[in-house]
Length: 400
Image 1 (cartoon, rainbow, N blue to C red):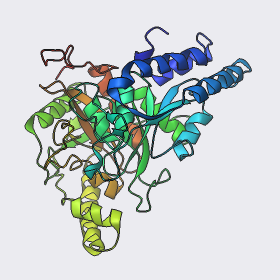
Image 2 (image 1 turned 135 degrees about the vertical axis):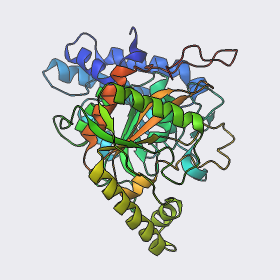
Image 3 (image 1 turned 120 degrees about the vertical axis):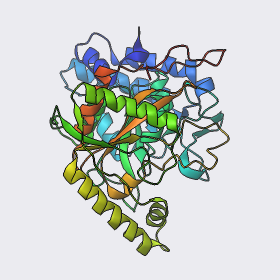
């Protein structure tokens, strides 16, 4: 199937609905791309080839009989910790998605969930094989940006959707806590997906929220502020500069306007650990949560959107992050519950993608989706990873 690996989910579903292509053809193309990349990518823990082809035939029959499925024939990867019975997997399959495999996640002993593990070795970043794709939704991000699937499920308890999306050059949205069933008793871990296009992010959210479409967001003139470090994080200057430049494009096009407002929070690390683990430290954790919630409430009384880099640094090697806390800019919003998205912003000098994080008021996912669509139009990003060449330089570059 020509150009399969650069099609987004919406395009595939449209082709299938018009019967320009069969679901079996689409799934075979996905499986072929998986076979071609998997020996080095190692994005999947479990293969569902036989089941996927059988389901593809069933969906072809349903479409021929007039079924109207929003994601008919879209091949997807499913995060291994979720599985086929996971809430969002059930909804995606109900709309015609075909699961081709379970994507990699870290070992249970891995600190800060920034690796993907398979029995064949670590999952690699599709841009630079000596780097991690991020985690814990490692295989999902790698599979999407290697062109294997246009959409893969994820979950975000501290940044586990947004960080791999940023490091692999994709979109990853964490919805408002509580809008969807949490995957942990603390209520921090929210379902999500990693996709290549803004319209796929919107389509995915409409399926998860069981709505015809996500409500239209304010189009122009969003009041915005910027924080490179949220008042406590140690952030690499290149990450901040590239993310800042992406916001500048939105400002220049009139989609957002600057509003001077402080976005300094208390470091959420001890609070997140206490809330996630329970027991010791919960009283202090609730103090941090209360203070940060009050500061964010005041902030969003004055502005519509807060921008930050998604990550404090570039993807680390397979030896680990060292002292860098890759979650330092993301996990505050798992505690506060605010919806947040990582949008491709550009490319660092080492060839790896950089993400821009946008955070908005509770329940305003539509604003995040509009910002992603606006930035995609202003600065289109590659729909597949462009690996570095033998000289160590990118074969093609995102515009920084």
